[in-house]
Image (cartoon, rainbow, N blue to C red; front, side):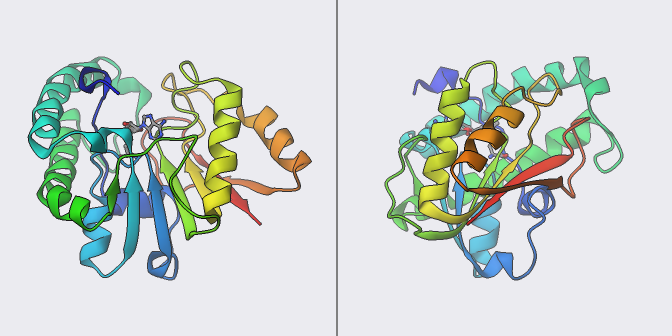
Length: 224
Ligand SMILES: C[S@@+](CC[C@H](N)C(=O)[O-])C[C@H]1O[C@@H](n2cnc3c(N)ncnc32)[C@H](O)[C@@H]1O
């Protein structure tokens, strides 16, 4: 991965809890965060005593490289958000400015934890569709804002391979959102549900507790 192609933009533990409807019991599980990038999910939950391993190809970069890329991306993303703000609901987060503050706070928490987390193997440089883990190593895998969101860049087969790999390494998989960057449900949702059902995998599409991008209301859960 080239750093200039990475768009680090990370969410908080509070947002992960809502996106994935994580109960207090879920937070005690061994969790894989897939494509966590600069989210503060791992840093915050680890501090509370949780067990989280995050994987992302951006973890090949150093703290300083990621920090300067985050600053560059902030300057690129904020005007984009201003232009596209009608695609979002501004009830929980009141404005583009507040969004910027929330994201930068989450990414600051990530950066402060990054070196230690790398030493503790909580931030691992890896990428779907091949993960360096044993079968069923995790109780739960969560994947936020990667699969489905980039349906224009990733094929149906790449989605299927990624989901099968997540299902290999974790007993339960939750993916959010099921919408693309344009805010429409990904065209891959229905064919993937059929592929997974044909493999006798139990898939449920249900409501997420998180609301920000319009139409991004559903979460896909895959259980044994
Ligand atoms: C929009 S960010 C989402 C970050 C975080 N999950 C969140 O919601 O705050 C998408 C992330 O997917 C990561 N990514 C890109 N290719 C990947 C792959 N093949 N496997 C896993 N993650 C990947 C990117 O590096 C980036 O950090």
